[in-house]
Image (cartoon, rainbow, N blue to C red):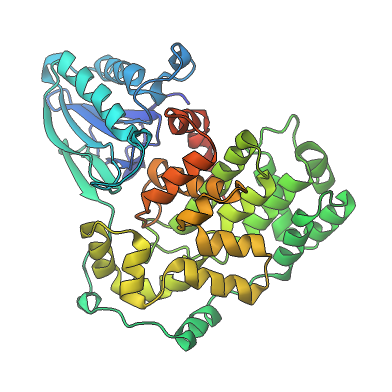
Length: 457
C-alpha cells in the first residue's frame, strides 16, 4: 500500500491505516491512528506547519529484503520514508518533534509465550530510529494492554493519546447494570432484527460439499438489493477477479460458489449487527467490521494450517453474535462498563459476568440455539474464549481463537475487547507454530485490504 498525502482540508478527521502514513500541512484536520499491538508515530514541524502520523504494523520483516515490496509495513523501513516525506513538504529536521503510542503487550504476569510480544519488538525499532535521528519524543504512552488512539491536531500541532472508550456523558451511566435473567435475554433477542430466511438457506448451501451453481445463483437473485451489493463487492480488489463480474452466474464461475455464498451471507447479516457507536462498538459499525475482519483472517489461517476455510469464515463472522444481544444492555452503562474493563486486569468475559450475570459467549449460544444453527457454529460462538476449545485436535477452534486475537490487536479501534491470552497461546501450540509463527502470519495477512473490505459492506 502506497503512503498517502492528505490534501482534503475540509475533512475533519483522517484515519491512518496500519502500514501507511499521512503527511499534510496545517488545517482543521485531526489525524488518528487506532493502535493495539501496532505502534503509531506522530512527527511534526510546528514552524513549517507540516506533520503527519505513521502507523507501523511490525518492527522488521522476518525475511531480509521483504521490506522492498511494502516498506511502510515495517518500522525499520517505513520510518525513514515517512520522515523523508515530511522533509519534502518543507519540514526541517532540526525542528521535528514526535509522539509515540501503541505497542500493547499481553497482560502483566500472563503465562504465555514471548512471541505474543510483537508490539515491544516494533517499539524497539521505533525508539532506535528516533534516537538515531535526534527527533525528541515529547509525548509517549506505550506498552499497556489496551487499544489507544494517537491523534495529531493539524491546526494547533498538538498531539494527544487516549484510550478507546466511551465518554462519561450520562449521569445514569454511573449506575451499575442489573443482572439479566432468561426472560431479559429473550426480550433482548426479540428486539433484534430477524434473520432473513435467505441466510439460513445460504448456511445450508455452505455446509454442502459442492453446492449446485444454479441453485446458488437462483437463491441470491431472489433479492435484488442483495444481488446488486454482492456484485459490487465481487469487483473489489480484495477478491481480485480476473475480469469484471457482471452477473451472479459469472461471479460463481470466477470466484467459486463458496466465496459468493460467503459474501452474500455477510451482506445479509450486516443488518443484524448494530450500526451506531456505543455499547461494544467503538466506531460506527465497529462490531460488524470486527466480525468481517475475523472471518477473513480465520479463512486465511485455515488455508495455511489445513483447516476448512468455509467453516472458518462462518465461525469468524458469527463468533461474537452474543455481543449483538448484550449490546443493548451495555449501551446505557457504557462509561462504567468501559472503565471497569480498562482498569481491571481481567478478560472481558469476566467483566460481563460480573455486570450482567452472563457473558457474550453464553448469550451467543442461546441465540444460536434459537436459530437452530449447526453444532460447529454453536461451539465457535460459545467456546471461542475457552482454552480447551483452542487445544482441540480439530483446528477450527485454534484458528478462530487466533484470528480473533489478531483482529483485536491489529485491526484496533473497532470494538471493546480484552481477551484471555492463555487460549491464544494454546492455539499457537495446537497449530504447531514456532516462536516466529504469529509474526509470520501477521506479516502474510493483507490487513489493509481486510480493513477496507470490512468497512465496505
